Every structure is written in C-alpha cells, then in structure tokens.
Image (cartoon, rainbow, N blue to C red; front, side):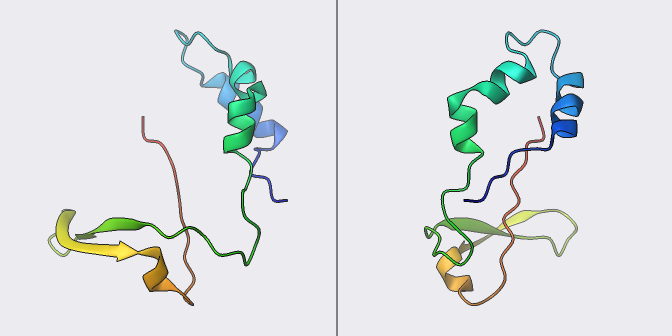
Length: 89
C-alpha cells in the first residue's frame, strides 16, 4: 500500500511552524488515527479513482473567473492527471 506520510525531517519542520495557540502539537496530530487514515492511500497505482467534477476557471484576463463549464475526472480518462491538494491558511 502506498503511503503519503511525511519524512521525519518534515515532522520537525512542521513542528517548528505549529501555531503557538494550537491546543495540539504536531506530534499529537500526527499520532491521531484520523490523521493516519487521511494520509494513507486508499487506492493503488493503476486502480480506477472515484469520479468527481469541479468547476472550470478561465484565466485569459490574468484573473481566475468561473467559465460556467465543469471538468469531470472521467472526461480525462487516458490522459495523465495530477491532483494537488494544499492549504493556504
């Protein structure tokens, strides 16, 4: 099974940026069964992913604006797709 658990050095880096007013430490969060479940891949390489849809945005003006169209994962079948999840908070 694939795992997306960070390397040990990532744990140290995350601990250094944990919010000072957080009731949990990075170690507390990383030890949580919920965190472990969320950070463990549920499908393997080559397995079919669950289909989903997202709104499409145009950036031809330099500003992202909704195009009114929808992009479905199933519509990209046979093409390489990279899903990048992150937080900007």
